[in-house]
Image (spheres, rainbow over the protein chains, first blue to last red):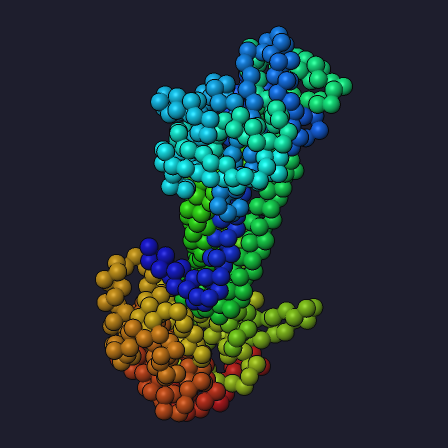
Length: 384
Length: 223
């Protein structure tokens, strides 16, 4: 304890430098924890996918649609138990900055397909009975302060749906029962969108329930085979593959975000090490004086390394707390739809603090070794 | 005798060249002596002081202080020995700027097993001896040069060491402050029976000592 106050006083020697070092470590940990949270969000969405759901999209791209008549063809394939479809709507709520995902879905089959969408029975009934009804995730409702019965007006974002605003009434607020669905989206009746669409009878993707996970490759192949050489060729994958391929649209996220996090951590390590080395160089005489007073070299090592560790861990804790409060997809309103729901987990925050400790340890070790090896007479002579 | 030096030699190596600094120095210092070491720059007096303080090791010869042959001690052993037996006073005071006068004086006591209260008592006694009890909470930057040196002396005596070593303790002070420091050292020698070895260029400072040794080119010479 008596030495801790000595370490703290030393760390406060140059307040500006210490604060800047703490901030650089905090920023590194913040970025690390936030990037890990986004990656974990993608991984959780993939991991939470059902193995008995497969997704059919246009072979060219997800952004191209296909006719509802495909549904009849898919239903005839052996092993197909159920089917639903959805469209990306892309409406604007008051301002483009208020982004959230809206899906035009076939209500009954969609809710049947996704039991993870937890909706009270009376709300489900209201949703199915009202053509302009919508249901929203509880996270989205919290974000905009919506409640049952509220009217929501969306401006058209994709020209296919004309120019007239869409009026919706919130008939249900659902909870997400698994990571395959999120609580940041809005679902409404596909027919409402279709009747105003320039191209009638078009859907973005089909979700097909199959009888057994083992049959996914054959059924997927059969679906795609059925529409081969038509104007609307398809590409069918398991839901997990679909989620993964969506994530891969951003490139190799693990490599990309991982590289950024590593670069930030390593550059911070250099900054912290340089700062510690500068600090030790400035204290050459003091270290020599302490050695003269009888402080063993090992203790000098521990003082310097301890100081680096202390500064770094303070930065790490600040960065982790900052990430905990700020890097939350729900609060920021950037989760939902295909973007993962992400938030910094206690594990990520702890790893961030651990990394800060590692930075402090490595950054402090070299100057600490230099300081402890200093020959007292040489150090005193350097200044005298 | 408290201190016995026998044929102590010290050479420094600069690249391939060996530079002899002390050339077979032998001396004896009794307990309670106040010794002044004089000599021109490069004569080896600071080197001799460093060897006596155990912060440097002789190339050959033996140094025995209080019955301990320090020239044979390991680095760690020397550190422990220094903390118990040596109080060192530097020309430039060398106080730790982020610590108060009290904390600077307390520093050597952190190496002991004394309780916080015991440490506090020792520090206040040391500050009282140097007449700076009222400046305990001041930082070095808030003190004059003379006051800083008195805090450094308090730091040197707080562990009640066997030996006080002073490397030009008045070299950075004005005449009045320097005189006060020398009076203080004399008091420590006479009143508290501290053995003091002081390196100085100043003959007036050397006059305060009970014995004066002259070093030239690494050996003692007659004054």
